[in-house]
Length: 237
Image (cartoon, rainbow, N blue to C red; front, side, top):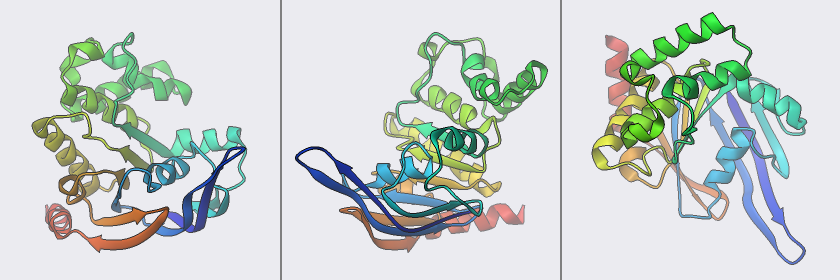
């Protein structure tokens, strides 16, 4: 699904040149759940932004669904992004002035889905995530865990081919954070492809693989047995 080869990203100002990514190579197959860890400033968020087509690399190759993404114009990146990628952010990024229903519906409007189909899709995903009774509420009327479920619903409502999660439990207490990680694990068990940036060893243990970054490079990778066991059990059901 994703093949990255020798990817680099350099930020330049008049006085300073900072290398955020330095020759990253990475493969993510359909159905993978991969965590990226590392200290602040190591390049993990930069990598996530490039995978999510929110930023462009300085060099290298990024293939998504067998198509080269490097060099695409912003208009073309936006088209690929809205049809293939769902984002879950640490700060939820919900619009306070819109109801839960309207927040979840937004990506469908951007994708020009007919009104009758939008309502059906919003109601279906809200039911799956246990927030159907909150559709008329506004974000500030919800708990942190409920807000993150709304953010997950918004990310999933367009049936994206890959889910990008940037510190999805960073602003949640342990109970709500655990619920979100169990939700992501369930989505993965049902076939979702997930790439998650996290500082939490506990959150990373829910994924299949964890890569550790430092100074813009990948310096280690490991398999996470707990998620492998959960995934295998789910396939038997």
